[in-house]
Image 1 (cartoon, rainbow, N blue to C red):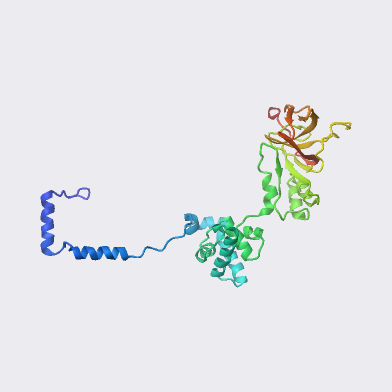
Image 2 (image 1 turned 90 degrees about the vertical axis):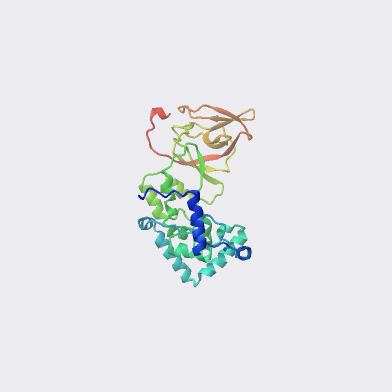
Amino acid sequence: MTRFTRPVHTFSSVIRELFEGLRDGSIAISSESALATAAQSEENRQPPERIPEEDLLNTAPISVDPRFLEETGLQEAGRRLRSLRERLGLTLQDVETSSGQIASKHGKKEYEISARRMTDIEMHSVLPSIYRLYSLAVIYRVDMQEILASFGLDLGAFLRDSSLTSPPKSHLMTMPDGIAAQNVPAIRDVVKHGGPLALFLLAQSAPDSQVSYALIGSEDFTMYPLLPPGSFIQVDGSRRQVVDRGWRSEYERPIYLVETNQGFTCCWCAFDEGNLVLQPHPLSPAPMRVRRSPEEAEVIGQVIGVAKPLTEWPVSAA
């Protein structure tokens, strides 16, 4: 008989094997008392310990290629976190207790870090969630940026990386905490790369809370060529009153950042019977628009500063 064939059991052969098994004792038939005892034993069996309701990524260490760990620095991050914990004299149980208190305060279980999970983070290169990173920053008394830096995430690269994206629509911009005009190396780095972000960075020291910043979208040609796509603008929110006369040239005419029901845009403004007229530059392909104010359009403020790229835009783009 080859390995790919199997014997065929007929009904008669099965009966014969059954009787032979009963005779030599290899097959036994349980009595009613034995069956009852087995059933009782099954009822008394303790259920297995309940596994916490967490997703797979949060409960079990992930087997990771060592080469990947070398590139991402997860192993080094685990060692740094362990060093921070031991420096404060904290045990794994201390971290579990403290993170549980943070989770209770915020009403979110995601902040909690069990001792087993902390071991996985320190020893098995498990990447914690953003909630657990926050808990670690609080427990270890370090800035959140320092915790993120342990995993290779540098918030100082925010400005340089933002120049890699070009959203099509104009929009307001916000900056992460910790980046200020006093950060001279960062300013020099931005200027060195020739981006228009230098003004955007320097203006962070402005004490006026009415000042905000926006980026002209890559497809917003409303004020082209005065404000080409990619321009960073500084907006004074205290100057929301539209001035539609008194200038000598287009360079003196106020430009406003306006929020409409379709997004943000920069343009000249004028009022006509209660409607806000959004006027583009004469060389712009964008049409003039009329919106009800403030239901459909609202002036955010007047543009008081701009840093724009000196780029030759193709005719097709316009």
